[in-house]
Image 1: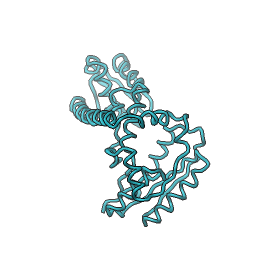
Image 2 (image 1 turned 120 degrees about the vertical axis):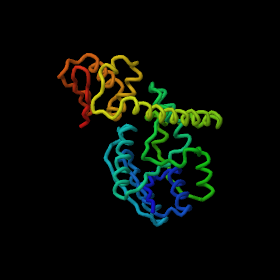
Image 3 (image 1 turned 90 degrees about the horizontal axis):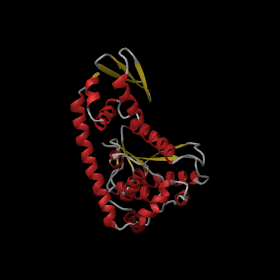
Image 4 (image 1 turned 60 degrees about the horizontal axis):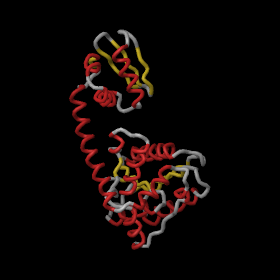
Length: 276
């Protein structure tokens, strides 16, 4: 029987998701809640979700961090997914989150504002299932209201400290047609990403050694994609640029520390990469 680790914050999105899954008879559910320790009232959210799990008669797992009120969205996200992945391994389960259509549009906007490359429009965690991506926020609220579900409102969602909150207000005003255009763009980018990844793997081969001559003569954008695959996406774009420079110029027998546990070693014609 398949098992599901369902991330439930207590907000309307995740409460609706849990109700949908329970109604479909997916009773092998582990409700997972992360208290980031950012807001004073977060303890009450955890107790609410625990009571919700009892109502649906499913397992409940939670963790509390002490990230503090100054913690960034990125730090909170990493802590959250670390916990979810540990639970997925513990229960041999699939992680399910309540990300919906508006979340996708917000993420695309944030990546664009931060100057993302094309991959910023094709973000996708292969080990995470997101069944609500085709549903917008208004429909989820309507569903929860119709089902008379209770949920918690996160006061921090009103704060301008977080970029996503500022973006969310603009996204909420977009007509559905504009949101659908962004979602279609993302789907197309995901298809391109899959095709590009397959082509890159075919071009570079399995290693462990790679031709310096090849990397010296291909366009830098292509070299970036190849190095991203070779280094298992551990390096930032500037780090990959420095590694590419080393591939072109390093003396034979030298060793280059690229960062994030990635080390390259060079012979006259080839280089190899070690991931620690």
